[in-house]
Image 1 (cartoon, rainbow, N blue to C red):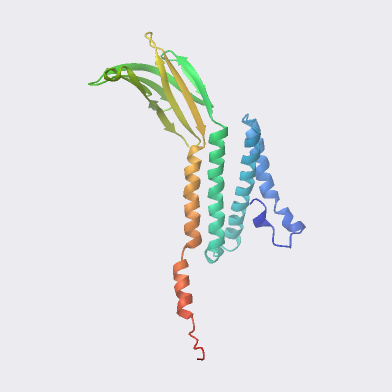
Image 2: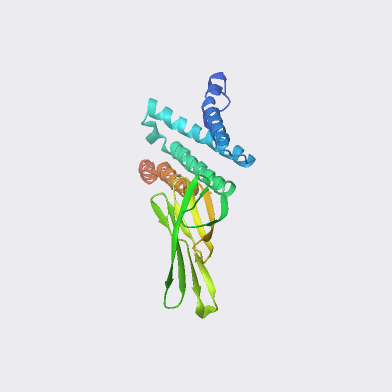
Length: 240
């Protein structure tokens, strides 16, 4: 996928091979970035750069078309729609790989005012409160995450033999989903949490949207084209 669109069938020479410098450069930059970020997972160091190389190829093809003949995007919309759909597939694949291979979690006990950092995201425990409702008691904690306040909580139902249900606090950023689970609380005001960080989950949904856009672009106008061909069809009378 990274090299195929750049290599013409049976005519791959030195000028064409030079075009591969762009996907190779894209993969190299991603490898360096991952290494600098401390990523040591071998599957991630293989899968993500390969996806980056393929994405660079797709973007290169679009760049060439826009710089030379923008109208070709319409005339060969099936081809460029396929490029876009493949780009969406790559974005989704990177999101799936990152969310599976790069998930981080941490168990921590905090007193009010203390903070924890997981995968570069800092959460500060600001306090808690207890609410007595009709059928259960709810213990709510507050975690400051940037300008947001997350409220992981735990509800205990006395009518169900003290059964407890946990409410997970979730927030989404362009680069990760952060989950905070309240594990337990203490009388001195401290609380225990489990914090999960799943990177690039939103990329899965974004990739799906790009795939749909590519399919729509590749098939736009197909109905009118079929109607035009049918209109131009010449009837032929066969001899009896």
